[in-house]
Length: 133
Image (tube, rainbow, N blue to C red; front, side):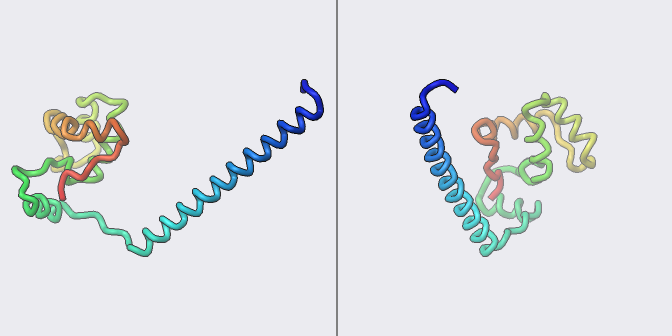
């Protein structure tokens, strides 16, 4: 190490102060997280909506048409979102066809319409606003 003993001591003191501040910040974040988790558990966890409930919400909100298969199937949505960065739409449709039963399969045009409707949310933070309700 170069520099005088005094300079090294000052650098060590600055490092110690920085680490103390960082530790305090981390502890504060941990406390905030624990509080949010406890509050979330107190409020209870809302069970996932069934497709029938989603359809009823769709009608109740006076939305036109019928919602897409992707919009009412959370598992299918998660499967698709996990593959959007690495696969083409054709590859995603093929993967869905290989993984899900026939009544849950989608078309390329349906996937494309869903992607266009949700692409801004997908690009920004990967959180898709619920299409129904």
